[in-house]
Image (cartoon, rainbow, N blue to C red; front, side, top):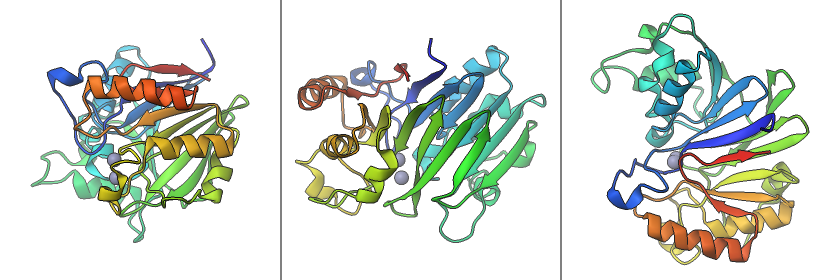
Amino acid sequence: MSRFSATVWGARGSIPAPAAANTRFGSDTSCIELRCGERVIFLDAGTGIVPAGRRLYEAKRFCFDILLTHCHFDHIMGLPFLLPLYKDHVTARIFAGHLLDGTTCREMVEGFMCPPYFPVKPKQFAARIDYCDFRPPDTVDLGDGILARTFRLDHPNGAVGYRIDHDGRSFCYITDTEHQPGVIDEALVAFVAGADVMVYDCTYTDDDFARFRGFGHSTWQHGVRLCRAGKVERLVIFHHDVSRTDDWLEALAEEARAEFAGAVVARTGLTLSL
Ligand SMILES: [Zn+2]
Ligand SMILES: [Zn+2]
């Protein structure tokens, strides 16, 4: 097992998609668990973080970081249900840097975990939690030789892309973001250049993209363009629309692989070694 790996716990965008037609790729929203040596880092806290957190706790791992891209529901809705945060021997850090109006990470969490939206407030978390703010393009030093570089993405209310460098390898997590048709964002290419893996917002296809301009999402074909431009080895097609069934995603996997050999469609349970 590599010293650096990534496991998908939720690959859906916008809303969970539990249905008989979605069992192979999974129904949970955005969450990826990185293992960097002994360290555990979650990218986003969608519903996928709930089973991930339970598994981590059962394995008696009591320390982790959460890096949030932004706080749209699909990326945070697992946080109030994250079991380890209710345990007093757990230590966690939660990072956010997307907020455009000066709201802090702590204020953001307090803002959505409060009555009448939710009965439990974050002060009822028993874990020791540090809320950490940054501003892209800050580089966040996570310790133990793990660096999180950050990039501001084009998304309503803001979002942050991450590049995690560890042990000579790079993992990029670029969701949620919208591209301009016919334009390659050279700054984003430079940000992901040479990475081993890039997870990318592939909510739409080039065919249906025109109908969803301004929604803040991108296409798998644009992910391929970025990988080619930045010489990124592997593309993880991510943030599946709720309408995408297993059969649709299987067909997409084949089509994408034919176009770009390093393309893979994210599904719950997929682990990549870097
Ligand atoms: Zn999203
Ligand atoms: Zn979003």
